Amino acid sequence: KTFSIDTNLTSLPTETTTFTLTDDALDESPTKARVHLTEFVGGSYISWDSTPTSGEVTFTVNGNEVTVNLAGITLEADAVNNAPNDQNGALSGTLKFYR
Image (cartoon, rainbow, N blue to C red; front, side, top):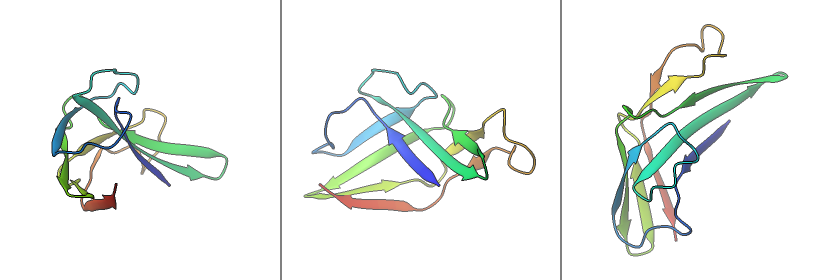
C-alpha cells in the first residue's frame, strides 16, 4: 500500500497550513493538495484519489512536530477498481512526523 499527500511545496510548512484538496496531481497552486492511496494486488493495482469535493487537509505545526488529521477526507475509487473495491471511502486517523 502506498499513501501520499502531494503538494507544490519544496519543504514542510513551518506554520500551520490548510490545503484545499484536488484531484490534479500537477496543480501548482501552493494552497492545494492531492491525497492518493494505492494498493498493489497481484499484477494490478487499485487506487483512490481526493477530488475537489474531498474537503481540506491541515498540517498542524508545533515546533518540529507536524500533525495531519485525516478524519473525514473522502476519496473517490478509481474507475478501473473492480468490486468490492469500486466504492468511495473516507479516511480516518492521524499522521505525525517531525521536520
